[in-house]
Image (tube, rainbow, N blue to C red; front, side, top):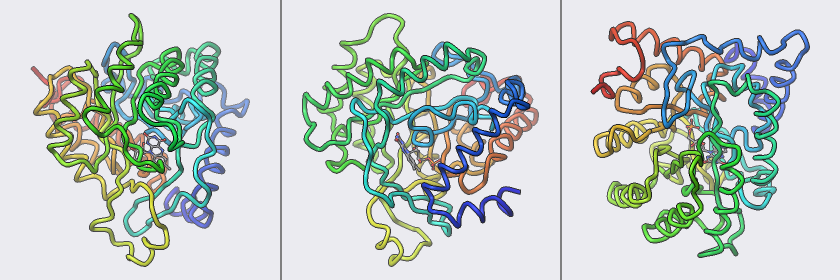
Length: 367
Ligand SMILES: Cc1cc2nc3c(=O)[nH]c(=O)nc-3n(C[C@H](O)[C@H](O)[C@H](O)COP(=O)(O)O)c2cc1C
């Protein structure tokens, strides 16, 4: 129904407008009095064999919504309703930001991809984290087994550099740790005017060192989100810096500045201009990076695979290469909400085939 009926209607609209309409309609549906908490949580406990405890957090299932879909943490009910096992909210930044001028989100239909240059539009870390704390306090059931990641990035302002940039992240971290089950440090947003400031060994070391100084007992685990555009050598050196700073996991990866191998014409790409590419074209790189990191890192390090997941087969491949958790965004736009249950159902079927009782027994993770 989504691909034959709903998608053609949504794809008539500007992509950002379509996002707002779909999320608001979906949320309204979830909050109909007849829906009640049972409908919102219709998937809670649906896939008991997909439940995992990672980093001291219980995930009902391994498929999460990637950062960027719910920047201001307004759609937790909708995400759980669709069957996601967790969500990463944000990116949030120390100062609120309206982001880049519109249009800033584009569909590449022939590639099942998107290009965005949203520019970190968000209501600011303080407001978003307060919203999450309040929701957690008033709807504890909603977040039971549906953990909440908060993705922090540097405020979209090229004048903030050096120590000011570290203070900017630190301010967001200060709010995020009061609300998150885990915090992801986004060092890889390609849509800021100044580019990738923290994908440099020294700068990353200073940033993670600054955050480590703030950390207190009971703070949520910290993960780092990488770009798909760094070469293996650079990626290895960044991972080494993260390991020195006791980073507990990695989100692999953000959107790409690359445009290689796309079916979309050069003329159309030229018209769209700059931005981060997401969706199907990222998948081979995501798979390669997950396999590489799994072979290099200790078993307890949590790997979240993100980039190009739009089918159960791809989800299974990533778990088989060593991902503990998955995230998607663009796949939902092209395949619709049923993709979430299709992926979780397929993971359970695969576990039956493999004769394993839980995700932690998947061959790549088993002792
Ligand atoms: C419109 C849009 C906005 C995004 N905003 C963010 C963001 O604020 N922070 C972030 O870390 N990633 C952001 N992302 C990247 C996604 O979290 C994800 O890493 C990327 O899209 C690859 O996954 P996908 O192929 O499943 O979409 C955004 C992606 C899209 C499409």
